[in-house]
Amino acid sequence: MKLDLDKIDVRILQELQQDSSLTNQDLADRVGLSPSPCLRRVKVLEESGIIDRKVTLLKRSELGLKLTAYIQISMDRHTPDRFSVFEEQVNSFPEVRTCNLVTGQNCDYLLEVVVEDMEDYHDFLLGQLTRIPGVSGVQSSFLLRSVKENTSLPLGHLI
Amino acid sequence: MKLDLDKIDVRILQELQQDSSLTNQDLADRVGLSPSPCLRRVKVLEESGIIDRKVTLLKRSELGLKLTAYIQISMDRHTPDRFSVFEEQVNSFPEVRTCNLVTGQNCDYLLEVVVEDMEDYHDFLLGQLTRIPGVSGVQSSFLLRSVKENTSLPLGHLI
DNA sequence: GGTGTTTTTGGAATAAAATTGCTCAAATTG
DNA sequence: CAATTTGAGCAATTTTATTCCAAAAACACC
Image 1 (cartoon, chains in turn orange, brown, yellow, red):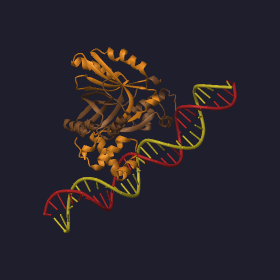
Image 2 (cartoon, rainbow over the protein chains, first blue to last red):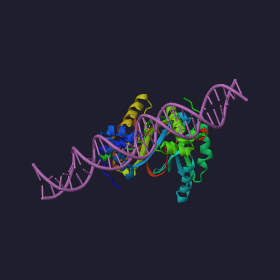
Image 3 (tube, rainbow over the protein chains, first blue to last red):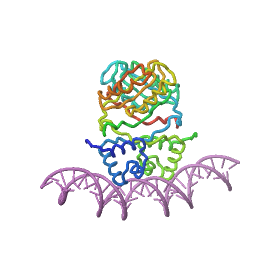
Image 4 (spheres, rainbow over the protein chains, first blue to last red):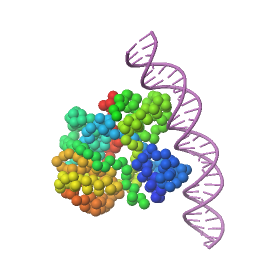
């Protein structure tokens, strides 16, 4: 479903990307509409499939999750079976926030993993991740400081 | 502010992480409470600082954003000035969704960048990113397939 | 340039949901 | 075992979302 979005639609999407808890009233004010046409546009956007879902983001520091790791994983063989087993396992681990299959000579998968501390990470790595058949190379980087943490997608190209 | 969360609190957080558009009524049903104590707990959680913010996630495919790149960046010198200039620039680029300073011998920053296509990526890389003073090494990987895209944090350690 | 048509908006009325206050029950503590 | 604290449920109030209809704006065609 291809929508043609005007400036107001894009502004609505930008506002909602930043804060989904806005009331329709507030959203309408920000984009310069009255509540009823604003709500109508939001509904159209939701039904069009552009909007995926709304989520609540928690603060890891408040939850005692002090270690975030970025892991590059290489597989020994690039067979469908290797991949599907790995992906099924990864999906079952709550510590894994994201897992992406990527191009590149160095690795096959990029993972973001969140745990309490280095001990937990050690346990996760040796007890879970490297146990999955086919995992041949693992290289970890650890988050020192988050510079930009943005869930928004760029929309400038639409206008 | 250190909260001690019980099972119900954790279940509330888990539900809200998945879907922040739940009505209080629905949320109450899912965690086995009546609406008013449920709402009261949500308010306490919001005021405690555990909840960061609520956002709307959009579908990149529907927006014509067909290329996601993961970039490893190395800096020539590790001086505060180099870092602050780089981070300021990166924050101003809408294409950059995340930027994290990490440990590791290979690189200093990990970035996730979303653009329309390879041509835009080329323009971004040569026109914006590598123009920043101090950027000495850039290595790109491109998303082939997203295996797990989860904004939820693990909460299992709380109970 | 005017006129009819379509689309979009704004405002009021209605419905739904959140929010608050109160009472009761259960658990905890002295 | 009684007193206190904590949480649950119910009902009333307020806020917010939703719907409907008339008016305005944009558009196309003559």
